[in-house]
Image (cartoon, rainbow, N blue to C red; front, top):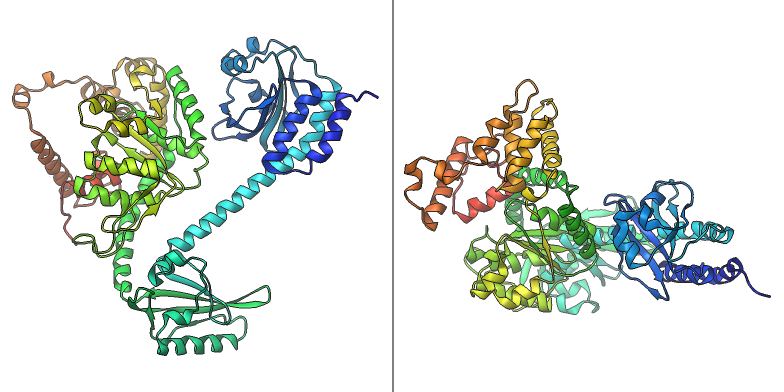
Amino acid sequence: MVLTALDQFRQSFESISLLTGENFFRMLVKSMSQALEIDGVWVTEYHREQNSMTTMAFWHTSDYVTNFTYLIDGTPCEKVINSSTIVHYSSSILALFPRDHKMLNRFKGDSYVGAALHDDNGEVIGSVALMSSQPQELTEDITTIIRIIKTRAEGELQRLKREREIIQRENQLRGLINGVQDLLINLSQTGQIVMLNSTAESQLGLEDQKGSPNHISRFLTDASKSKLLTLIETLGSRNSEEGYVWIPGVLEMNSLSGQSFEAEGTLSRYELDGKTYYTLVLRSHDEKVEAGEQIRHLIDQTEYLREELEDIKQNTQLVGESNPVKRLLQNVYMVAHTDATVLINGETGTGKELVARHIHMTSTRKDKPMITVNCGAIPASLIESEFFGHAKGAFTGATAERKGRFQLAHGGTIFLDEIGELPLDLQVKLLRVIQESEFEPVGSSKTIKVDVRIIAATHRNLFELSKEGKFREDLYYRLNVFPIEVPPLRERGDDVVLIANTFINRFSKRVGKKLNPLTDIQKQQLKAYSWPGNIRELQNIIERSVILAQNGVLDLNATLVFEGPKTISQAPASETERILTKDELLEFEKQNIIRALKATNWKVSGKDGAAALLQMVPSTLSSRINALGIKIPKE
């Protein structure tokens, strides 16, 4: 008896449905393709924020296509996402979807069948699709097979999503525990160390003895050992609701290296699987004063961080519909799901950091931090410490061990802005991190291994700099694995109006003004201007125009004419007769910042702070204050 396509698939699906994860999806698409004799079959996960899809598995003409992510705007898949029924195009889909010509030509698509996958709440989470190089009718076998796999595929997609969420929460919890400066030590009922955080490992000298059994008494003096055992006995005899005690006085402790310290804290008890465990939460008594100072410093920084976070939240989307931006987005999505090093090139003010953040947020590292370093804003004497951290006593003022930016970015992304400003001696050390994924903190012989994705950006021509000996050629080729060019605003056509409207909406809400839409003349003014300062200049001009606006009318002439086309030749002769040296320019910048600080009573952030007056991001202004050696008077 000859089996039909449906019978053949039913037989294979019985065993496939028992699989999970990648194996399930890979066998599913292969089996569907073979049973229906269709060139390509894929199952995708849908990313609503980017309106894109990533294939969970893709089988095409006897082989798998891996790591495939694509924007679905103007594709048959977009129709699937917005439809509650099976979508079918029997032939000539290239003529119907000309914007999707790259994919359709690559996979020789002529006919298409697709259906959306939903979660328990009815939200679209992915799709299943079939594509053939020949005309294809929507047969009953195809319809039935899609219905058969739909529920199982939806369930598996949801399970994988929940699994990722659990792993993310576990990583966050692990990061929280290891990020705590206190010593967290988990003990068995007999006092055996079961688990401890990285701070406790470091303080007790156990970094190289992970997994080795240790008893807490090994690290206590005789008097403190007796005190702790008495507390454990006392806590063990209490009712379960009285699960913790403060440790009176301090515990005198010794690390494996012989370093002695005093610690104060609490002891708590909990039950798990019928067994009793104890948790010691300790803080070095010597570090208590220093911790208080750090807390006060963090409180002072809260306003800076709040404003910077707000700025990041408002600038996470790349706005634009021009062809250069579409090409840019395509490159972003092509590289985002890899770990390739990216070099972003573009003029000042084009939004290179925004592109870097978009790559990070679209990548598999999005749940880990993206750490930004402006290589041009950190003094050369401090940049190695900023990159790699330093050991206690490594140099004057290094009163405590400090983690560097690369260590903070572990598991995530580090964005090296203005990489062309990096000193040559540091370029050698950066090259080693890229090649070996390891480094030593300043003043330490301990090697730190890191898993970091590197994105660099520059407005300079690194290739020319390398030929001139001002930038290491080997580092240039290491960074230039996947170059991305950010187009200047003058090449983006109508995008300038879209971006201007975005800024108008933001700043009008901020100042509480209701403004009329841009007129046709104003749109032409914006498009006709050359924008030497690119998006940053546009943002500044729109913000000033909104502030100056009266009766709902935006006056671009008050800012655009004078801030934009003005050149040095238009300035008075006395301003152009003498060219300032590099040192004079730095001094001019320093005095300008000091004047702004004095005018705002030395307040850096906030609406009435110097950053707002200078139209700078508070964190950038803080970096320049430190770099220029400006001392802010203490109250």
